[in-house]
Length: 439
Image (cartoon, rainbow, N blue to C red):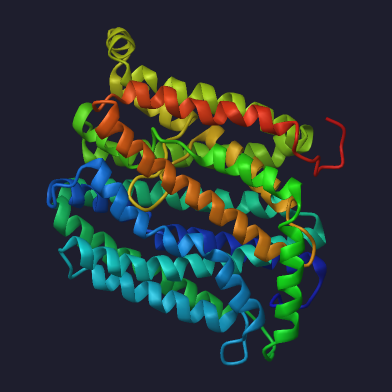
């Protein structure tokens, strides 16, 4: 396969990749509906009168393009479009995403909005796969996978600060309908920016379809799927990502029970995103250097359990009332968002907090290390599909438990949610040591 990175010195190659990843993930956060996530949730709740269960089921439709991510990798790797494997596809899928966002600006019905956002999901998921494939391939060659991932998530969360504040601003000052339409219009700029960047930056030689290589890849993938180690990694990632107390239900809890304004919810998400930038820097400069991945995984499983239970300070009536006599509820929520993070609502990730981004980077490095040679990009996309599937399943299950079984008790749901990061502790001992260092 022809390299899409400009061929000069090795240092400039790495610099180009880091810069392109920074730009790509900055705009991809917008393209993943980061800006319109809050306005979309607000519109469905206030205008269409959706509850958390119904809304989470609609949002599940938007997860489908992310679950089939390996398919995009196969197509772009082995079936060139107009002679190009990367550039042509990036132009096409981002054009599709931009068109979908522009469609939303004139829509009011639930089905029509979801259809338009489904187009954007296909476009951004495909872009994400192409960029991730470059990261895994070149990360394996240079040994800089952790550095590349840190750069990606640093800029992703830098964009998350802006989109969180913007989403809260649009929802609070323009209301649910105009806020959604204006946010969609601004969001359309993101894929257009990536189109321009891809056109001018990506240098790629023309190539032809390689069906023999595609067949060989299928054989290698089948061999990879027989690996018990890979499936232990899958189990760990899915358990880690399954958080029923977060997602859509968390958003409805903040608006209906805590009575937080849309503007303040935007500030909460921004606080989590800003703290995540610090967390990404700490991971890159200190944590991944001093500690092994196994040590970090143990720390993340413990902090994930404690962090989930920390939200009882907002949900448990007795704890919340006692704490409110000392600290304002909004201050407590802000600290939790910054330190622990809050899961996404609607169709995008909100600020994930300082400890949240450390856990994310640790698990992503685990996923990258588990990818067998010759099918690195495809396997990584497959692992990300399992993560997306588990994330959406957690949101749906949480909404159903919240409405149908727990009588809208967030306290019970938080206790259930804490079980899953705790369960990860028992899987870590079966995971391989990808660092090559003693634990």
